[in-house]
Image 1 (tube, rainbow, N blue to C red):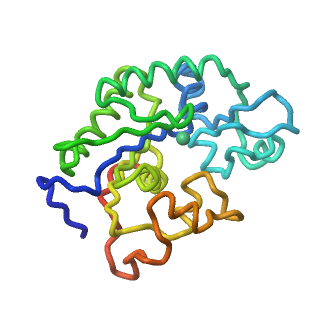
Image 2 (image 1 turned 135 degrees about the vertical axis):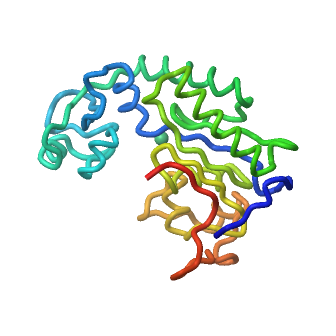
Length: 233
Ligand SMILES: [Mg+2]
């Protein structure tokens, strides 16, 4: 088991990255109680030839995800509810989310409508405190924005690795990723919006403060999983 000295300030925990889970679909479930607990696909228009913009976790279980053709999604997931995207509503929620999380920590950067990160300073870099802040942020989202608005939070030495943390456990995850336990290249590639087909080149990786191959992930049969994880699945 990975052990943290919860009281020491750790330079590894400099950034907290927040990624909202299945954002558009979650907002629809928050707004419309009739969609809760059901497989939902947010679509540009109701037509089999268009593509899913966002899928709820109930729909993801059937393999439906962003980019799935609507006709295929309906075949894959019986009972799938299609709902047209409502951009204005997602922007309103975005504003409410920023307001809520800013009560916990000042936002360092808003990366997209459903992603942002925060800088941890001084005492906030103690693992116990960093985790407390992450849990407080989740609580604030639930209490002030809505219980269907959940986020995966990653904590790491830089925004990139903190984001990798958010990718490791969804939905509602919390992963603290120390620098000496880097995930494999494929996951890094996926995590920063790169596709498997087009992984980042060495220059891109280096600009993010990583050197590929220098620190392989210390995992194998019987060895512990990295980081501290809560929630998710
Ligand atoms: Mg997201």
